[in-house]
Image (cartoon, rainbow, N blue to C red; front, top):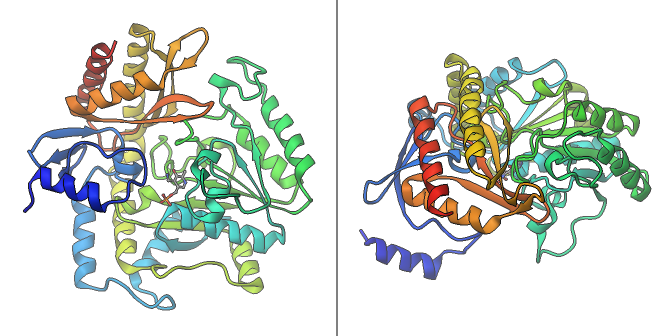
Length: 431
Ligand code: PMP
């Protein structure tokens, strides 16, 4: 087995650097809330991997489902089904309202959104898609067209017909209209602007319940109901991207339960596979039937694959049997209180926000001017990792520098205390 040094040499010569830099350790094992590097050093994971390990890493039921699928069947021709995918459709749809009863199973969030956009275009006959300026919906052409602009840098123009609404970030009002007391003028003015650019061919609006990669932005109370009203007036479909928020993370099984509306199309990914690639696009029987009549929706080589489906089924069983939704609400409140105490002690923390176990901590140079502080944010994040805590910081132009704190839903009080203590130590070390 190559040494660490040899491994890093291979990384340097043979791996594409797809994002920022790689963390300076190699993870060999993971269990629950912890990662273990090659030297056996323990790292507390407050990122749930890439937001997928909701049940903690290597949950025994997930591992068992993988083992069983290895014995049974791994992969099939796209037109052939296994019992696992049918049971998953049944279990998932039992958790959803009557207008979300037809599911398509794919692998990634990008694919699920791509399929949703195709459905909306087929159903409405339109092609225009409205998204929020700081959203993240994936890297494929359609999904990335409504994803924030910096993700497309160097890629050239997005596909035509995509229109952006300002992100309703109440800590940094996009239209500099209100501070802390939102009247949703950004939505009204934003839609006026979008309408003025539309050629009258709306298909869909796509949105996340909490704009996670965009800086854990929680739209104001009532925002989504108004958004749905705007969509209905324009006969466009509302696609809700619950890649990160579904399955308990916000303290309800689905985020839309907290938003006072049901979307026309719901997309699910990340959390559904418990660490394996599994995604779903769910819509009504009427929309599905209409799309089926009109054309070809979407599938890939791994549509309906038996192994991820078996894993998804295990994930749903664990979530419901272990009451992880309530757990997320309880642990989220505890963690948020801990973060608010840190805010009381450290001027660098300008804002603490979020719902359930999806929390954002915004760093500023000055609380009055709210000037973002990405440099200190990066330094503290590095220090946390040295001290044994993995944290994710996002810094989009105009959106501040924000830690996204999202441990697995199975996290314990002791682990939360440990993470808060490391974070405080790191803040002190970097002052
Ligand atoms: N939607 C949201 C809200 C996401 O956070 C992501 C991934 N960051 C995606 C879609 C894209 O999912 P994937 O990377 O699995 O294609």
